[in-house]
Figure 1 (tube, rainbow, N blue to C red):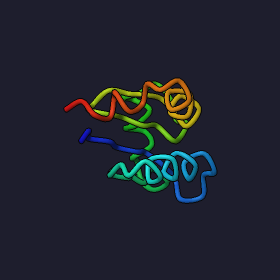
Figure 2 (spheres, rainbow, N blue to C red):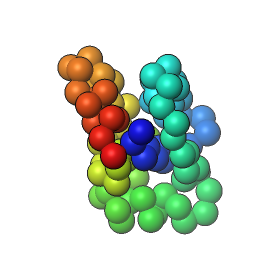
Figure 3 (cartoon, one colour):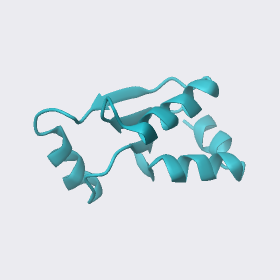
Figure 4 (spheres, rainbow, N blue to C red):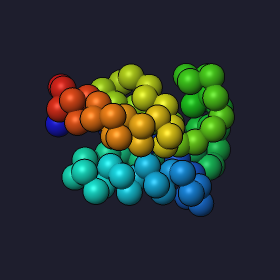
Length: 84
């Protein structure tokens, strides 16, 4: 299964939706809370954005919730998740 990392904050609606979508699909993921400390600054350096969620699959930035949901609708997410 793919290595999935979700950068999120605890009270973000779109973060919750992204995690729900992944959980519904049975995908294990690591969540990194960027609501504290300088984690959000590090995320901005890596992605060019302070917005959350930011979702990485196998080390590649997929985007946020909208991109993840769009990939799911278009049937692209399963293929990406099945690659190692």
